[in-house]
Length: 305
Image (cartoon, rainbow, N blue to C red; front, side, top):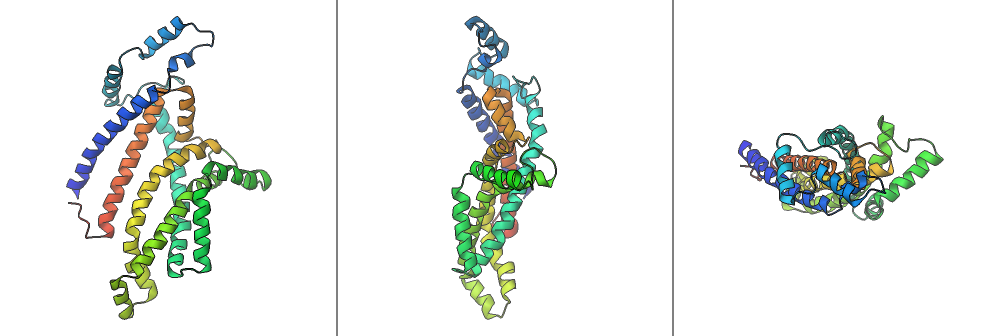
């Protein structure tokens, strides 16, 4: 197990290097941020002086080498707009985003797991039909539209929940429901189909023939095997939640790292954009490693040597 985790962490270094190269090149395709730092009546000479001051007049490979040299020392640059350390700004906002993502995933699992199990146990029933409709609606409705509808209903019309900001649980409910609905729909349908397939296997029929109770068959035997593809999807959904969190935080003015990224993209604040992408890449890499380790715990046949 330790050797496997060590290899995966080593591979993660190469992944982060690749991510850093891609984001380094892509953010420079968005335009020159030097012009945004100057008044509208600034001359070309003023823009050129600002470019030299920011270091954007050097060749790209020199800029990237300087970025990597400073990054391995924990220095990811200074925000062009706010004049603060870029990574400190991202890490200051990241807990709010992780809290929102965790709450959204909890909402998705609370909806998807019981609904998926019941749909598999009672195919073509009212519960199953409701799950199909929920899956279609959940995956078809964009989260920004769903967020606006929830704000209009629960904040404007009913006045039950706040429409923006960060505070207690009441501030998290609407953004978490908005963010977690699509994941709930996908997990629900996958769990239904996976569990129905497992319930038709030989070892489940053998367990029934031995007189095992339905609860024991489902929760002790079937779900353990049906949960492996679901676990894979949950790991992939973390990536989807990151993208959804950016939109959701913007709709609800939620002060997380996603909202900071949107503002930084508008300002072409390159150091903050790079710091955000690398921080999220680390989070996703660790989540994927955790999912792989859980595979071995769920199914002893999977070797993590």
